[in-house]
Length: 569
Image 1 (spheres, rainbow, N blue to C red):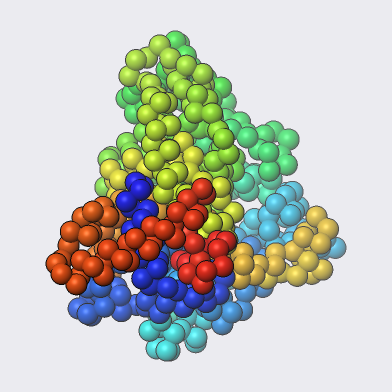
Image 2 (cartoon, rainbow, N blue to C red):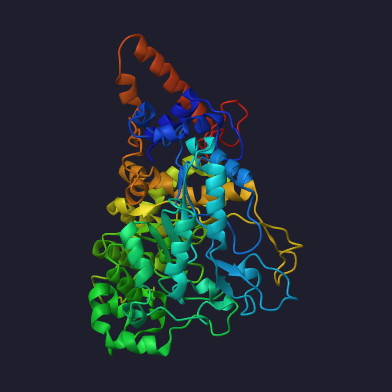
């Protein structure tokens, strides 16, 4: 952001002074955030969205929102609705969690989160109970109630078990019959989730592979999704490179039969990976050690190819805590290739771990560590496979200028530390494929008291509060400040969300006011006579005020006390 832009942002905040309403958004911002801003045909839908002003850049749409936990009680309905509304969420999916942590030994303590009891004695067990409870709440507390005029909710079926799919269609039919017209989304459904490995994810049932997909065992459910055109959120880790958080002795490995299959099918990998092939395969076309980072790619592509008419939302860009070190250039290349190949594939940028592990956790990182000469995910001898680290650093510094404007505001409710070099790399992908991404928090509504749900880690529990939710909305939404106007309208304001949910006749994103701000001289030149005089006085006053805080790039308080910014949008 250039100096003129910074000055005009300050101008906006002085002209429209806002008072902080709660822990995230201001009273004026909340007054602006209403469904009519998105209602087709309503005059409010023509009011442009001031993304760097009163409306803010935090996402009004949460397409990945878990209303219920792995086990134990959720946050009470009315309380959670208050959190969503006061944090500016206007559209949300109602995901459950499709598995329960059911202990095998009755004398063991109850557990509400898998990493609090990461053993085979607490297997993740597929169960439709969360979907049933969500449907009940939707019908009794939301449908045809005043709340439905304040927030738009879409319940999702999350129970399907791809590893043991025999009962998926039967359970789906039961839910559709009993709760007619309620469900219009499916997922989050796990294809590969390494975080659950210690809880028996790979030990119970069938491992999804190419042969298994082609056997047709998953056809009945996925064909139904193709017919009803429900968006289907699938969790499919691209691979893994660590089990730091997963206490499983075997760690992150690729089964020997899958390594052999990859070698036999090396031509497919060579065609798909292009210039990156030799970084993951040796001269004999044998997978290298780092192949485990992308081990599930061909299986994922096979699933997408088998069900081409299913609208798939790839959760978390295929990343996890168990995949930390895949080079962002390689990852962006893979995502782009998949998007170009599969027209009904979308991806959500949900989960605060993406921001805190990859996109927004900058702390004096050395960009040279991403150079193709030193990173294991590159073959330095392949000229087409290069990373211009100088250009990446330049792009990151440009993002940092925008970050400096909003830093104190974001840090007042979030935990991120600024745009990384990876953020600069992924941003190009978000812009080039702006019509394929959606927003989400991956928040899990859980309220399990430590004394009742200690798991195997004493007094852990799962007690979420409003501050937790504000932080996750902040951390996942902070990247929105860097998007250009087109991407912001499609990704953040719902252009893509309304498309995949077939709500385009009812809802549409409002226009964006514009992120290209005029210079101070241009502003002064607008108008004549008294208008020129008034504008000049205001701009000069703002410039003086902003200069008082020029050393750290933050906004000044309009109440004159200094310190962090009053705006918390």
